[in-house]
Length: 300
Image (cartoon, rainbow, N blue to C red; front, top):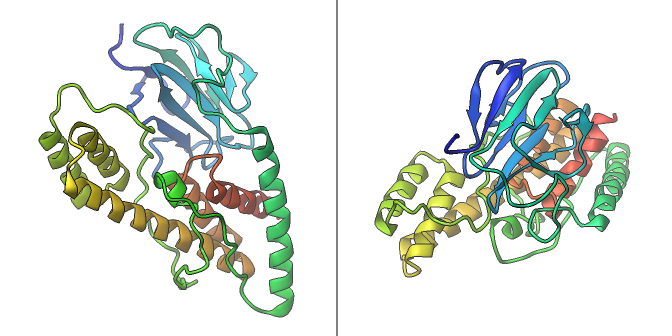
């Protein structure tokens, strides 16, 4: 019986390999920088994500063109996985291997315990895409760049900080696409490891911070704070990382709008996909705004 959840490659790029699922989950697609890269036909740049939630393993389709199939059935939204389930993405096939059987019955999504999208959220990308299209057409006609669209402001976690207004985003040089450190997002409110103390977690977080592995650093600082709420350096570093990620999201949204207005569609798509990597919460206004732009650009 495995110690951690795994997916075992049965066919495709990872055939014969066992891929462990880390505590923060992993993302699958063709885009370099993801945790599991499938550079093959039929796979979208950001295709799917795997997440651990309350002891269970879940999978989500990230809006891919060709879909995610579990036991030959295409999924919608989040779906819990069971031992032996088979996942097909493009030409790759994986089998789920879990340490123990989940206590939740069946494969259906439990709205009380797993992440899900609100029903009204499904309409937001459509309206966002239509609004963006009108803006771009007006900009092209007037011969000027589109203005960034402001979104609501919140003051809680990194997911809500990313939703703050983008009106004051710094100008972006359209000749040089922004570069980002694309790290996986931490699982919300994950408990600290049982075998590490607060000082050890702080040392680990400092090492991640120096290496610019922002999301790993956030996870370790958060774990240290859970064990030692008076850790001042943890609070300070978390604030700095939040500000850095917020700036990166703002700059990439603005750069994508600029590139799109100049008909540089591929570069615009790269910028908006980076926003989805930095803010993977599908209910976040920032995530939905970038997703709406992507749907518009891919249909062009």
